[in-house]
Image (cartoon, rainbow, N blue to C red; front, side, top):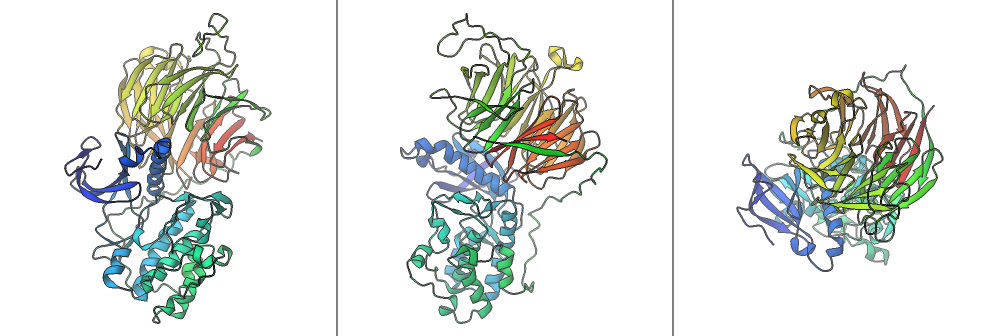
Length: 631
């Protein structure tokens, strides 16, 4: 299906003007937003999603597409295309990008012929600067070529686009590559299913792009070169190229990655000094959020936390961590579709939940323990429990939310599935129990929050108000102030940049907290219910007063997106996990950073305090769980 001119998307926020183009699996449209500004909307081709060969991979296609948008969104740079928003239209994920009026470098090259060395170097330095930012965030573009670089009309400004096969990388670690490449621009490493990744992959492609701009010739592809077909130096086709630039290109395209420069800046330095001539001013329409200066650390409050154990058992990223209220068990949920239970004290694996056909069929994105004090009656899914259907819950129930659009309830004692809750139309990102364990809240990429009665599995309410994916939900704790049913609250954080507070009894949205400038990835109530912490893709954490709905302060210190926040039981400390690979400890009442924990080699996705506040557990994209103890 192709959207025609006049088609309304995202509740009328965008109107299709025309189709711009399509690739193997994607299609792009020109559209106008509500301010009558032109935008580009990219989505997946419906015939690909419905093709028999792709049906089993549809969820991964959608996930990869949304990942591309998120990767783009965290890269704020004048020479990187900017993302306006991300949404789903039916079953099609969509990303909205700035409209760049102009043409790509491939079209420009065909129109004008070879570029002068000065003009080519201007564009290459601009893209090189953009790549430096991308690499600093642990990403590789992996598809650099003239067609993926736009030139703004009447401006000497190059803009890098299309991050469809961009991937995270750990320098020099062997990682699996998507088998996708553009011959002539891809290095030999991209012809291998598993190979080390590093900046040198994009350096090869950037050098090949400069080769193409100065000669109008596509370089000999890397696979042919490995079979003894020579790569002619660019001077062979264009004698006007300087010796220095000629040598820099050949060095950047060395078949052996260790012989190439190991950073973009190192390679740019080979091209000679940047004179600054003909450099156009940065477009005023691309604003970079200023970095606020963090408060100075407090020496007196420094805490000594040590990693005492690293748990390895998951075969993919750990996205969710929960600790039982008695402090004995850790539950972990992973991209490998499994949930594992571990002893907190020893790190021993107790059991895996979900075997044979009872497990989740996609990423487990959230887990939550019910309060131990709750004694609930339930029947197992399928066949009733032999002991009159009543279970004595010493460890209670575990809830898991998955990108298979379902929630599962598990008996922690036996590891058996109690039931599956179905009702969300998209990924379940977050689950949270009420303080008495009788209800469960869930937040989903379908933009809704649902409330469920635990002992029956009946959906009691659907809370509607967010305009984008709900990433996190939290129940307010049971306190004297919230003891009556009309004072119980559920909070939700969303990709629409907001936090909403809902009155459970009526389902009414009582207030919306505004202040973050990008996705709200995580929220948590303090144990007394008076403060909400929120972590965001804008790299900050905000503390909010629940009764007044006012921002208390902003915690600044992480250099990347914040994905998890957790209060200590006494409410004095807050832990935060970030894409910058660190965990930070904050003093809540002063807002001071008191400790930074390093040890994860990739994004930190989740953190949780033990009930006594002396242990912290974290999980990340390095497939590990780490246990930290306070010295």
